[in-house]
Image 1 (tube, one colour):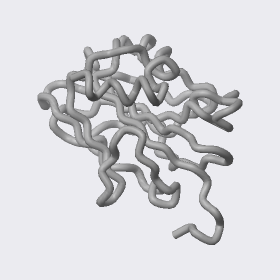
Image 2 (spheres, helix red, strand yellow):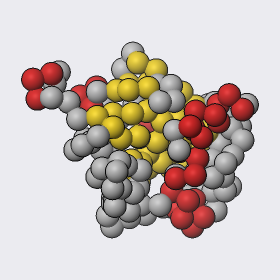
Image 3 (cartoon, one colour):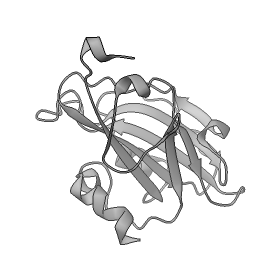
Amino acid sequence: MARFVDPLVVGRVIGEVVDLFVPSISMTVAYGPKDISNGCLLKPSATTAPPLVRISGRRNDLYTLIMTDPDAPSPSDPTMREYLHWIVANIPGGTDASRGDEVVAYMGPKPPVGIHRYVLVLFQQKTRVAAEAPQERANFNTRAFAARHELGLPTAVVYFNAQKEPASRRR
């Protein structure tokens, strides 16, 4: 299991977004045909639609997925850490995020400057979650949300990088 955590330590996801954890669920994230691996670079234009997030687990288990940008608005001055991009709760195990309840609508990456990390964190729920959308997306706190909803430590985490595209290269 350590091989799944090491890139998260190197990428400072563990520490800045989540605490050290032991992955216990398999989560795959794909934007179209592109499967995401920790630290890969994606163009924002390829991430405008929500990714397909598949999770393992038993169907009677429920999960919450959170996607944030810990580098907003700038990696050198992340005064809006973490910027919330998506929350889906009550996802049945063995399915994908489209089967859950979207609490905060998906917002694709739009990094204004520098290379930003986009972190998808999966938590196993103890019971059905009745989460409300926060009033603002800026300064969201994944750890505080997890504590408020008694989610505990993550069961899976994956992150990718994105940076602003030159106007002439957008597709």
